[in-house]
Length: 309
Image (tube, rainbow, N blue to C red; front, side, top):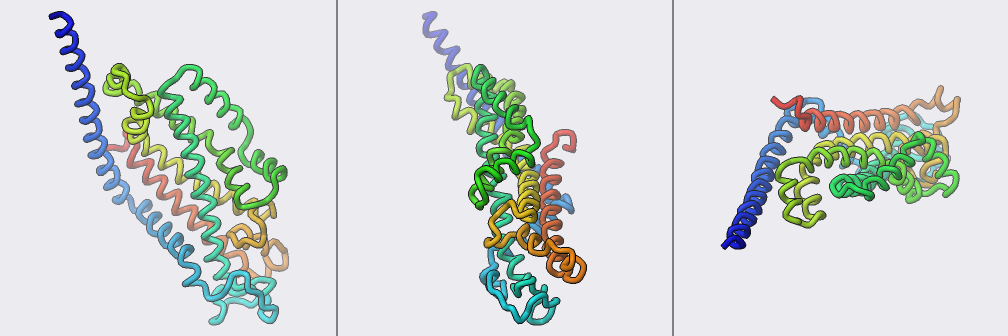
């Protein structure tokens, strides 16, 4: 009789834990919808989404929109200013600047967004799992992240690029390898807070698989800060790619990127007399990075509990 009573109580507690988890899931969905509405009501974040979408779509549609092959040279049209034939002029070897900006956007955005997502996958996975299980796993991963973040990221990037050489793949791997630490710290911090919730403690007490708890209950509740970090990292990686390519240390010169377009204009005579070679692409980089930051600000404000009305 006593054994049956204990089993009944255990089943009751397990059912309470399941109901609490389901209630938390319904609450999370309601909060997510509310946060989305708050973000769309933010004019700057909405503007950022529109500008981001326009630039991304234009870059993806480069084969349809670009009037010329970005690698096509015409020595009879060197350094031609904007005209009906070349809307943004030509560079110092006769390539169409508009076509290179459109095609360059595909690579630069891919590097920035791909590196940010790669860093997020590694950092968030390690942060959530290590933060949830704790113990030696958490200590080891935390020490590794400290070593990665002990040096300024741009210094590590420059050092690694000089060691492994220039290529698109190498640059993305270096960005991911040096950028996951901040994602890990953020995800770990969120997990340490969420795992103290009663429904998480109940799930843990009843031996629910750790991976299931992390993926189904902790990750969804940490998505807001994660998305904010991804947007900020995207902007940072695009600026770093542009800076490195401008210095001749980023993506190989034969691949059109926004940074490589600026690199071609790295000449005092061109800076003074051929503004169309650097001003349009500089504006595109600035506008795109601003749009990403506006999106990040909107996500941050909509997910910040102190901003909730």
